[in-house]
Length: 124
Ligand SMILES: [Zn+2]
Image 1 (cartoon, rainbow, N blue to C red):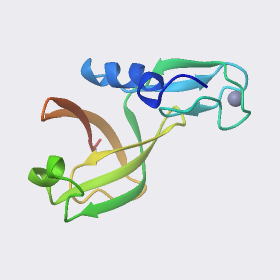
Image 2 (spheres, rainbow, N blue to C red; image 1 turned 90 degrees about the vertical axis):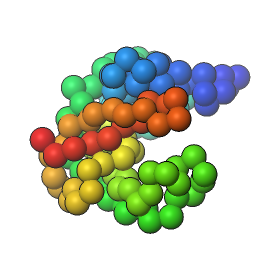
Image 3 (tube, protein in one colour; image 1 turned 180 degrees about the horizontal axis):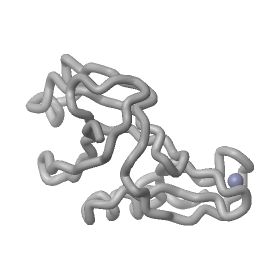
Image 4 (cartoon, rainbow, N blue to C red; image 1 turned 180 degrees about the vertical axis):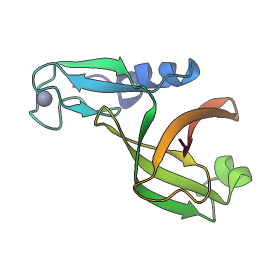
């Protein structure tokens, strides 16, 4: 395992810059997962391919962040973070419209903060 996390995740970050949500799909068992894993979390195969998500999914968990963990995120606080289970089966963390609830259908959008593309989910 010589690749760094940032190298492994590069297709994901490049996808964000193009307004695409990308996830990894296992060529051996078909399981889907999000970034920065070296092997399939389901069957341990390393035959992972990147695919582009349709951008819709269901809210799996919600957190309201009142105090940002770093200066970078302080201008955004308070904000809502969610883990969304994409329709393709991969789970992904991102920002969300305040008030979203577990089980709600959402679609990914993007916004730029300090030169980086971040994900923001909004109700469908
Ligand atoms: Zn697999």
